[in-house]
Length: 251
Ligand code: 6PG
Image: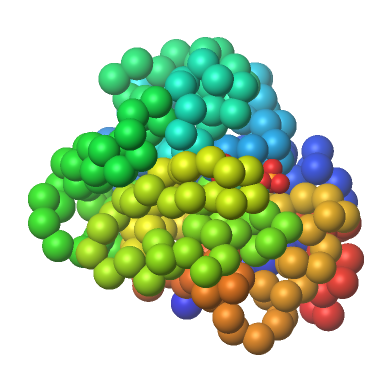
């Protein structure tokens, strides 16, 4: 598996690099297959990237009507809740770009968590033309680009340390309880992420220095450091870090 690592001076440069990679990946996929499937993260770090995408010079470089927007995870809250990943993406990106509402596939965080996971899996299987069986790692039937974050405890999406979701063999989307914020969430499983054509980890800030070192240069313990469970079967894994997050890396 190819792993690329880039260190940018600060969050601003990181957002710029991530947004530019989004635009290139979108254009490559749309040229080749007429559509681009992207899965977004939540929380704070991606805000600036989303805002960049929503502004010139980048916004007019994407054929937004060919983009299908997914989420890697969602908190179990209504879509207008301040903790909603969907709401954050709407405020920073989706409400500002010419994308048809039917291209935006949010996780229904207001539903019962297991039901929300199940209906998201059904939608995803239909979008990826895979009604049964495991996710397939091939263009047109996999997610083109997944952007992910890294939590201080090594979680990514809503795959938390010790979670059963990490070893889920069949399901593409599951409900997962986050004891850190006492909240149910819904998350895609590693099998889906690992079939993607490209995954970008977007990580910034001094609070991430230690965990970045453990995930990238420490022992392999995906059960305790879920970000290590992201190991693509065919695609490109790309870590984009700011200098603060990368400060302790040997390389
Ligand atoms: C979420 C996530 C989560 C996030 C990390 C890092 O919705 O909370 O998808 O996995 O990406 O917690 O968040 P920050 O980069 O904002 O610290």
